[in-house]
Structure formats: structure tokens, C-alpha cells
Length: 483
Ligand SMILES: Cc1cc2nc3c(=O)[nH]c(=O)nc-3n(C[C@H](O)[C@H](O)[C@H](O)COP(=O)(O)OP(=O)(O)OC[C@H]3O[C@@H](n4cnc5c(N)ncnc54)[C@H](O)[C@@H]3O)c2cc1C
Ligand code: FES
Ligand code: FES
Image 1 (tube, rainbow, N blue to C red):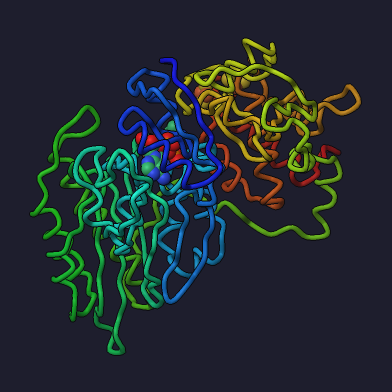
Image 2: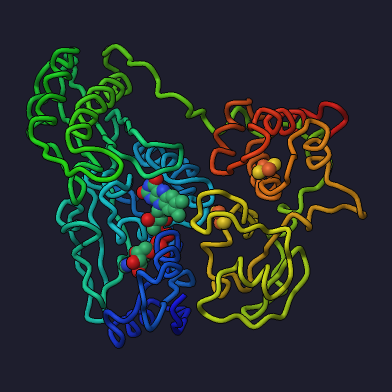
């Protein structure tokens, strides 16, 4: 990494003063899931990184008919918080499609919008939702409609001294929403994504319609002409197909290494029809449901119950880790032990764990947040240590797989992996174990499909996954005396 200074201001005024002073030479760090890869590859070479994670920008509230999201709202909160699901049901749907579980642990709404990848889900969603964004600088703040915020490829209306602080989403009660996307692999950015919203009047005709697309231009696109084709009309299969045709006709996407422009246009039409069909159904209409997209299982199949005590009788250190504060702002708290370690601003957590502290149960695979080999739990949530700055992890609780040890023995989940043949070379195993435990803590009674979805961001080149799923399911059910 290119050397840089690191500042972690504690107030908004301090952060804005730093941005004012350093302008384009400063880079804001939120979740780091786009910025750290850029720093790793030296595609960004800031003089100063301003870590905004200590600022009070994380709240979520519903006020006067709108949902207010602080810029530091994490992707996983979009998936999990009931007030978001009630006020803007599109947001949990799109959040589930973002990257993998580790990206969603740290990545923020503000970071995703400021990064402005044209294939990203949240920029498309805020354009569909008619959201308004608050941008603050040392000289005051202004509000920009989402549609005007994105100005080109990875470009926005943000000035170098401005911070995106909040996102206001009008509540759309009674509107059915759906998102459809095509990606090459689970967790990849979409090749094309479509968000659709439909509300119906008393006669079952379309009252309002929203359509936005990602991956088809240099910024998210709102398909207003296709919306007009729908308003006031019955949402018949023919009408939805006509709207999809209008979407297709008006696009001229670029070709790239992943897909030709012609293929993207084709996808845009197909996905628009599917998204509209589901949106009409969820608005209470009767459009025929298309086949569900493959491979995305709901994350949860039940909430904690008394009978889950069986599985949880081995305390998961993640549960304990959250209460540990002992490392202060300087050191690292690893597996319940405070470690006093000097951290350079440009060092990733993976480098410090392996190279400085010799904790080799954290593996290095891709170095890009994709494979999951470097997973650690940070305050109980899985993160890619290769995409986490060590400086940003100070004072927080870290768990690596060696922290699972109980009285010198294996954790019952590890025993289940051994018994079911879920371990061969073992390279992916620490990440699989930690991701599984964090998942089971929140979803104690998962189905096999839900486990598959939870682990889809952890790659294994040996076992073929079936045995890993067997092991997790057996442990979760308390079979074989595992749990
Ligand atoms: C393996 C992998 C897969 C991914 N897949 C997807 C995907 O499928 N879909 C998707 O949408 N995204 C995906 N992402 C990106 C992810 O969503 C990021 O979290 C997001 O793009 C950036 O959010 P962040 O909070 O991590 O921001 P950071 O990485 O911290 O910052 C990103 C940029 O925004 C700026 N910035 C951040 N916050 C602010 C702010 N409040 N005000 C002003 N500027 C700010 C930073 O300076 C930086 O330039 C993926 C990332 C990885 C590593
Ligand atoms: S995800 Fe960090 S090394 Fe692959
Ligand atoms: S056991 Fe070898 S990579 Fe998974």
C-alpha cells in the first residue's frame, strides 16, 4: 500500500475541517470494502485517510413519512432492521444481493453511493426510491435528489471537501417492490440489475410505477418512459412485456469483458419483465409469478427457541467477544487477549495478524474479499481481514479460529467438520467455521438452503461443499452428539 496518514475524527466538525484542509488529497474511509482494494492495488494514493466510523452517522429512524438513514448504516442493517423492511422493503431485497456476508458486515450505504459503481445495487435502489441525499461541508449542507447525485462512471456530485451524511427515503406504503439481477457468480457485482415498484388503485390498475436499472450505462438509469407505459393501465402480462420492450429500446449499454452491450440489453428486458411481475404480485395484483431465481434461500428459518439451547450449549466465543473493551483505542483485542501492537496506517488486519503477530490460522487467499480464507469475527461479525485496515480494528473484539479452542480441545463444530469429511486441505476451514458460528448465532434453526446461502462467500477448492453443509446441519441440529 502507498503510505498515508490516518485520522479518526470523533466529531463531524473535525472530519469536515480535515476534508476542507486536505481536499482531493484526503480519502474518506467508511466500510473500506471498495476503498481498501483500491489502496491495496495503489489505484488510490491519498495523503490522508479520514476514518469516519467514529462519527455519529449510523442511526436509522422513520420520521414524517420518510426513512432517515445515516450514511454509516451497514448493508447488514438494511437486511435485518424491521423498520427498514416496513418502510422501504426494496432495501433489504437489494442488500441481500450485495457481495458476500463479509462485505455486508462492514460496507455502508453512504460508501456504496459515494463510490457510485454503475452496477451496484444501492445506487439503483435510491434512484428508484426517489431518495434525497444530504451532503455536508465545513460551510454548510445541501440536499441532492438521488437522480442528480450520480454524474458518471464512479462519479458523483460530491465535492472533495464534502461528506455524504444522510439518506432520506420517502416511505412507499402499499407499493410492491422487487429486484432481479443477473451476476456471473453469487456475490459478484450484477451484470444487469433491475428494481421495480408498482402500486395499484382500487380497480387494480397501475397507480404508480418505478423502474431503475444498474449495469446498463455509466450510472444508474431511471426508465421513466417505461413507467409511463404502465401508469393507469391494467398490469396484464402483455402490458408488462410492453414496458420491458420500452426499457430495452431506449438503452445502449457498452460492451466489456463480462458481457456485450447487446446481451446487456437483452437481459435488461428479461429482468424488467420478471421484476415487474413480482412487484405487481407483491402490490396485491395477480400477475403470474415467473420462476424464482435459482440459489437464493431466505437466510432464516426460525427464530431462537428454548429447544435451541441444545445447539448453543457450547458457548460461542463470538457471544462473549462483544463485551470485551480492554484493548482501548491503541491495541488489538484478539481471542479475548489484549495485544499491544504498533500498527502502521497502511497495514491490513491480515498483515498484522500473520506477519506481525504470527497468527497463522488466518489464511491469505485472494486478497480481494472474495474467497473468505482470511475471515475473522470483528465484534461478532465476519469480515475479510485482507480488506480491513488494522488501525480501524483497534479497540474492537477480534476472534480467529484458534479462539474457538475449549480446554485444549476442538470446538464441537470443528469436530462435526472432521466427522463429516468437511475438511481436506483445511485452507478454507477457519473462514467456514467462523462464518458458520456467526450465522448460527443469529439464525439458530437454519435449513440446508439457508446454510448454503450463508456460506456462499466462502470458497472451498477441495470438499465440494456437500460435506461442509452436512457438518453444519448436523451441528445445528445437535445430531451425532455434536452440539
Ligand atoms: C468482494 C466484494 C464484492 C462486492 N460486491 C458488491 C456487489 O455485488 N454490489 C455492490 O453494490 N457492491 C459490492 N461491493 C462493494 C461494497 O458494496 C462496498 O461496501 C461499497 O461499494 C462501498 O462502501 P464502503 O462503506 O465499504 O465504502 P468505502 O470503501 O469506505 O468507500 C468507498 C468510496 O466512497 C467514499 N466514501 C465513503 N463514505 C463516504 C461518505 N459518507 N461521504 C463521502 N465519501 C464517502 C470513500 O472515500 C471511497 O472513495 C463488493 C465489494 C467486495 C470487496
Ligand atoms: S477474502 Fe481475504 S484473502 Fe480472500
Ligand atoms: S478444505 Fe481445502 S480449500 Fe476447503
